Each structure stands twice: as C-alpha cells, then as structure tokens.
Image (tube, rainbow, N blue to C red):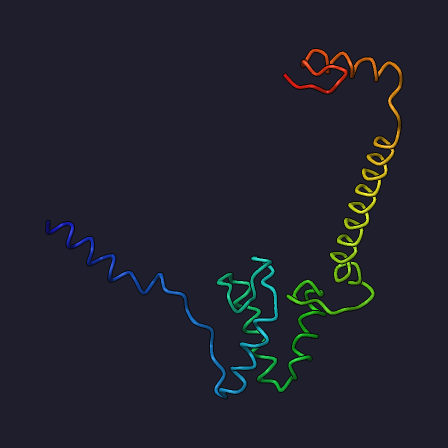
Length: 163
C-alpha cells in the first residue's frame, strides 16, 4: 500500500513536466487578439488540416512565435501573412487566395458537380429514349409466338381468361 501511495505521489510530482508551455503573450491585449486571429487562418504544416492556433506541434509553436514577433514589429495582418507565404508558400494559408494558380482549387468542386450532372442527365435521357423505343416497337413474329406460349403456360388463353 505504501509503495502504491509513493508511486502516485511521484506521478503527481512529475505532472508539471507533462504540461504544455503556453506561448509567450504580447503585452498589448489588442495585439494578442490579432495574433490569435491570424493564427486561426494559418495551416499547421505538420498537422495540415489544423490551424497553428489549435496545433501543439513544435513547428506550429514556432509559427505562432513568428506571428507574434511580426505583430510586435508593427506589421499589419496582411504583412504577417505575406511574410509567412513568402517563407512557406501559399500552402500555409488555410483559405488560399483566389488567383490564376488556384483557379482549379476554387472552381474544381463546381466543375466536377457540373460534369456529374451532365453525365446523369445524358444517362437518364438515353434510358428514356431506349425505353420509349422499346415500348413503341411492335413484337416480331417470334416474340409474339413466345409471348403466346408463356401466356398459355400460365393458363391465360386467347380470350384473356385467368385461372
């Protein structure tokens, strides 16, 4: 019992070693708020689908530090983003800008949806045309004889009587 209690005490004593250290905060609350807002718009290059604000990766922590340094140096929000884009590429932005290089990224989903709708429309149109042609075509002599044989097997004669 004493050993278990000692083990629990050691675990509790080591608990602060497992804690994440918070980033340094800026002395001005408005600047700190700007840093948080910018960090929410930047992609963690390790986690990829997470902002650097939400990520615990060491690179995300470094990027948050860079954002704070640039804000403290007096850069505007756009200047901070431009600095990081110049350094890491446009991939660092969670919402990439709308430009010629990203045209397919922005319009691709709508383009695929349009292509899919056109394919569905063409398939349905072809099926309707085939069904209409099949319904309008008269039976051949062989088909008529086969139909009559099936009807006779079911007990439906020439008069259309049932069982």
